[in-house]
Image (tube, rainbow over all chains, first blue to last red):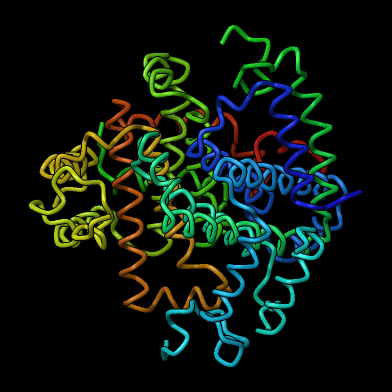
Length: 122
Length: 122
Length: 122
Length: 122
């Protein structure tokens, strides 16, 4: 089956329209929804050590909850991009070009510093 | 250009690997990153009335920042799905099936209630 | 009863220690917990119009959930300040001084602009 | 100096009123602000290992940023509690009583499980 963002967007919009939910989809609420779903993702990992995370990652029940929460974030992202009439794939490609300038390979290699600290002594 | 999640994932992984950043990509940090980027999205809308949001949505500088932040969320989502070896498109389709059961059209139509309150008097 | 942050901190620390939970209270997890509780707060308001929010604010069940979620955020904030050995009240006073410089009354009055845009034409 | 929540609330309200900002303080925006400040806290820890966090915790520049961000979260929490006419200290005490029922010492001791899983095999 297709994994095109355009087709996934049509799926979630159809789901929304069958329920007449467009009326609720103000951008600010969609952003709030995105944050709420991101926090549900985070809750799956709360208090867990790296070893416990590794174990959970092999657990089918955990994996299903994780997949569900990832899907919820993707859904809100598609709704929001639609509300703003922004092409997510194009936005991602454009942002990668900018990030490549902010994080040039020679400076950023192996460093987790934020771009405005790449040269710093820190 | 392609908007396949698989291809977009390859783009961001290549970006990551050129910088040797896989070492930092623990799931918990990727989730934290996703939340941080979601909050940057939210900051674009903070304090703004619906009318002001409408105006911003026509403003090219605002739209560029919005597109950038949406792209950042999508990027972290792709990293996280990759780290968990989860197919985002498949997860989204599976979640839609579950949501259709939680929110049957006849009950959910025109209502913003959460599924566990669909029958309630509110 | 006292509303001193110091005394509230002692209450939550006692609660924690009775359960031997200090071992889980790494700063990164406390921050994640803070974000999760903040998102639960946000969920109370999701999809609601200003009028609906006003109505909810009079509803005793809603108010109880709101009070509970505010308390959870305060609790995590106290845990985190404790873990970092930071005095919240002192930090707040110091930050107000900085904010007064970033947002001088004559420039910030009646404006919701971020400090780095106070002079800008928007 | 006092660390009473009531007095700290008066400080931030005075700061707000001198700038005529009450008009922007809708509950939903205050919640969004709280989430944004929580994410700024999280950004201080992003990508950092436990060892790196320990080192940062000794660093005065890091500590100042941390104190500032904790203060921002506390400020939004005070604004929000004020907007909802909720007494934070009382809410925290009431929530502790509920939590003591959800997490009885004998069951919760040394466990990071969520209350609805305290008996589970997991």
